[in-house]
Image (cartoon, rainbow, N blue to C red):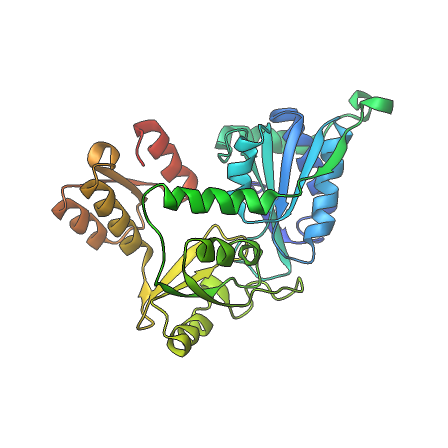
Length: 320
């Protein structure tokens, strides 16, 4: 049988490849392997409500508490799982994929993705059909679902304060923003405005079937047109769950991710904040990144493809 978990959780066409039964069992698994209090967030897909209900039911069937954060970016769930002292977090999203797809990814209590070994244990749990019926709690031992009213606000405050603490604001900066009819429509424009930016935003509404469609980080043409139209200094485009960002300069040129990492690493080194004078990327990084960092006195560690492997190397070496 093919492995259930891909590089970023379980994904497929909702209600066909990713079924409510699978979502229910993943909710059960979250409690079985992580603990009783699980935070759930989702993007704007139509199937998000259905899968959220199934995941929450699985959590409650194990006697757990499902904290419902609603529509919110993936990084916010990683943050709030830790800040709200949850045992784990779940994001219901298929990231940059078309609207008919959805996905489920699980975080541990520190907001980190699960290692392969734990995912393998969860797969075995699901292959057995989830928790045995005679082991489930009854009566007053079943779980509950509780809404988290201010989840997006907590994330916005964290993002703004993280920048302000470095003595930085965005006053005088004109920003063109494409939220891709996705989760960042709840947070990004507000955070940028609080930092002083003049923000013009497109695709910041949603109907559940327009997420990532000819917009956002995978389709930069609308952002390029917006940058030109409003004379922006920078363009920003997110994917559906806002764990991905594509940047554009004032001329409409895409700023590659390798370039972003080089700028961040060199800036941190100049400020004495680059741990071990080392940056971490994957083997997909352009050779130009290696040369640019080497010329700046920075070592580059390259990992297997997948952000979890980058993160593992960062945690092992204490890199930033």
